[in-house]
Length: 218
Image 1 (tube, helix red, strand yellow):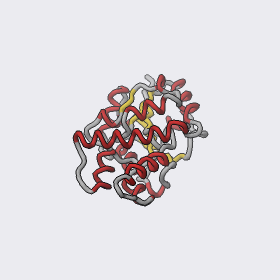
Image 2 (cartoon, one colour):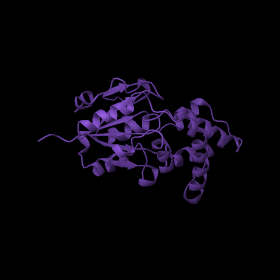
Image 3 (cartoon, rainbow, N blue to C red):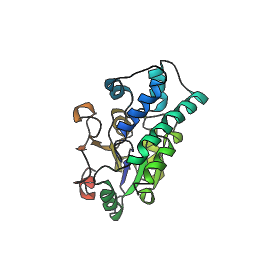
Image 4 (tube, rainbow, N blue to C red):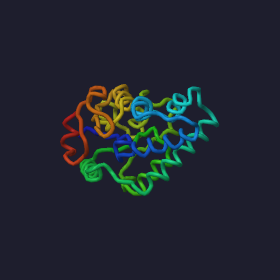
């Protein structure tokens, strides 16, 4: 019997190169509060992190509950306003997803971003119909590097974790997938290979990615 395979994509930096626009939104958000994080601060404490972590770190206090929801909505609304006119997928991803679907691969998205951001992305990157699972920040209690979002994705797709391949671009995201017992392809959109935990493969885009290469990782 043919072994079922799942491919699970993070979103920011993996489906679209959104991180520069997240940085712009956070800079505007923090400037209103007389804070000015550096590029190094963002590299260490923003990419791949949950908003609860980011806000708590830069505001230097625990941000949770109603305040977290309000501040998160303020920042993410800024992001959507800034990025909306510029949505563009990372090269080759739609063709790659089509190849995966034609070969019976189950496909999911697992992102630390809110669902409204996902809706914005798939309004222009037309992959929604191909997805068997979509999990966003609202769907988990523990954020990356905890494996919860990837283990839930595997369950949604009805595929064993060891038969799942994850595409991730951040240290915490790669760690989450490894912690879930999955194979990982590091997407080098935001970090260098040396800045990520060891992955099974690395890509800069999807122009050369195929079902055959993915299946070869298992």
